[in-house]
Length: 296
DNA sequence: CTAGCTTCCTGATAGC
DNA sequence: TGCTATCAGGAAGCTA
Image 1 (cartoon, rainbow, N blue to C red):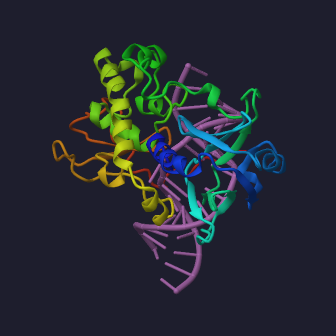
Image 2: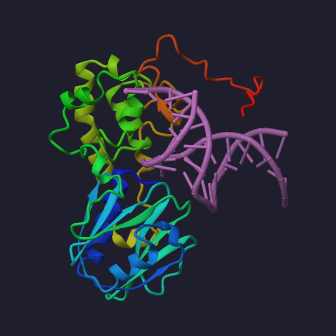
Image 3: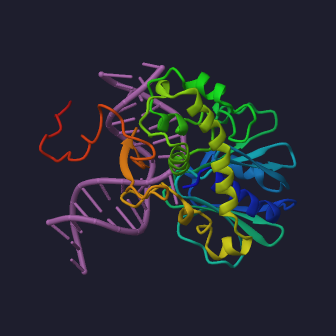
């Protein structure tokens, strides 16, 4: 589920509750969520270690241990990370439980099981996660119009896809890319190489702005997070564009439209963000008239 | 280089 | 009520 703001929110909630704690018994109900090393090895290496701090890189959460190793976690679509009392009811799809010496538990819950854990030992090269390939953090001062234009300015790719490309700027997902494009008044299907320098500037400025807004709007207390079972910290009620197909634009009242860009749905205001010349609508009525060609 | 497809999974929802 | 199809906030891997 989460994009950078949600991951950062979770980090801020759990961090003070786990820092300084020693990890005791570990229950793994679904070994596949341990991506590296093998689940048994992971447990042996983590058990007995103290947690010294947390960090975040893009949408990855990092938990630093006292021996220099780092637990890396990605929540993907439906992952939840929750600190609970030991007797807190166990949610369905709870795959990993870390017992802490505080008496509480750190639990990983993930309906679709796309997310997972890696353990990177001290001095072990991190070639098992994609973190080494990640691009700039949204708040990195190096994130400028020139950087973006240099990375993607010559590309025919849709700007929406560029925003979702974690190797350019990391942390943006489908929600915040729609918000960023709405704010900057850029149509999601515009080709990167057709953007003006002014538009790249608007993007460079809006990316940290929107992401920071997302983090601040998400803020909930640890108690609220627990009460919501790790789910209710998202700012969907405050979003301006994402998921608003058919609803009026907050700026001009024109109904938002929905298009598919690179397999992801995207909402935009046809007045504020314009329409794409030459390749409009078309998309609308693809019925089953034309049977898919049989391949193979 | 790039668009498009598949894959990892379960669940909510819309339509019949 | 139940069935089926579609879609979901992520991302890697593969093909053409």
